[in-house]
Length: 113
Image 1 (cartoon, rainbow, N blue to C red):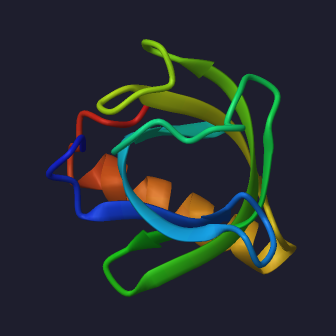
Image 2 (image 1 turned 180 degrees about the vertical axis):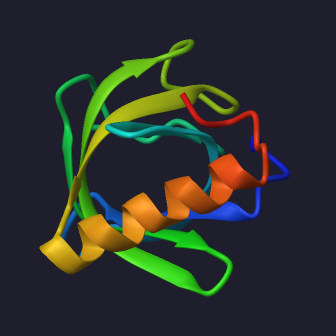
């Protein structure tokens, strides 16, 4: 995956009217989490930050979820990978996410962790 990924995560940060809509490339995707590439420093995005109402986008798939920031590869700056636990928004979203992982595994995509 990485910066040229066709898989993205979309969310508003910070939440509410003062937030911005972001679409960031997914660097890593696994059973319980994902990592996305920061394009710039996002003040307020720290370890333990919850991101509500995120959408994982892969091709035509759009999967609603919440995220919890667990780690970052560097400081929270441009090019850093921000690792998150993911919580699908519904049972249907969980099934769709599992289907996506199966699809990627069958494509022999080296991004499944």
